Image (cartoon, rainbow, N blue to C red; front, side, top):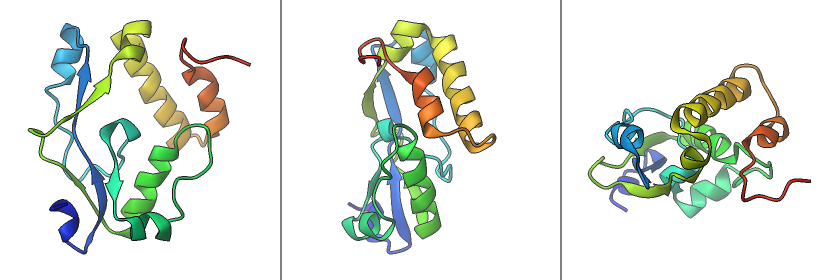
Length: 137
C-alpha cells in the first residue's frame, strides 16, 4: 500500500523465496533484483491499482508471458517498484525440482530471449514450458 501511495508508481512486485530449496536455490534465494528492473513476473506477486489495471487493459488473454506483458504495460504507465528484499513472497520450486535447477534456469532464460528478442509467440513458448502436472493435448 505504501509503494502505491506515490502517484508516479504504476505498480511493482516482490522479491521471491523459492521453496523447497536445494543448495542452488538457496544461493538463488539470496539474489536481490535491482529496484529498477522493469520485467516482473507473476510469481513475484505483481501489484497495481485497480484503475491502472483497467487503464492498461488487464492481463492479455495469452497462454504464457501475460505477466511479462503486464510488467511492460505497467512500465509504460509509470514507475515500477520492487518491495524490500526482507519482505519476500514464497514461490514454488516444483519446476526446478522436476527438471533440475540449471536446466530450468537456462530454459527460463531462453524462453525470455525467444519472446523478447526473437519475437516467439506465447503459444510456441507455452509448448516447451508445460509441467508434468499439466495435461498435454
